[in-house]
Figure 1: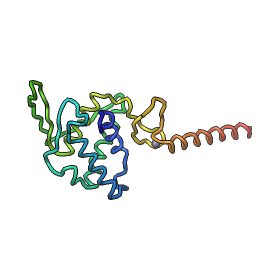
Figure 2: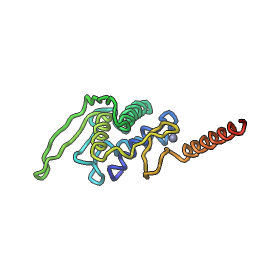
Figure 3: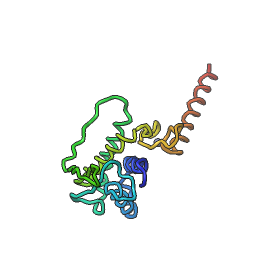
Length: 181
Ligand SMILES: [Zn+2]
């Protein structure tokens, strides 16, 4: 996950996934992705701050249940940002700790806390910096997705096909209705 966009895409993918269908291999992969998201290293994009989870459960110990809770929260947050207006729910990050350090004369902010708190704090900063215009709701299945190109309207080929089949049937029905008269 080298760029800010890649990191936001990971959050979107988590929000749209059904954690209960994950196989053991998926769980291992997602733990690794989670660790990369919350732990900053020199070789990746980390924005204006460093971060590291300091309160368990750590990403390597995340259970399907932990992912399920995180998925629900991320989904709620991303769904909110697709609305232009409306009431926005605040998120409490009870273990989040910020430390302002100095590195070679420049300020350096470090975030630590539980995996969940660091994850959500990073997500907020990323969305705030990068914008939310690529996060959309699929009109066919209501799932959240990342819009890769401007004209992409549905989350997947399956939904876009389904929508065109429905359009076809609606037109066919209209025609039939006219013929009867
Ligand atoms: Zn869809």
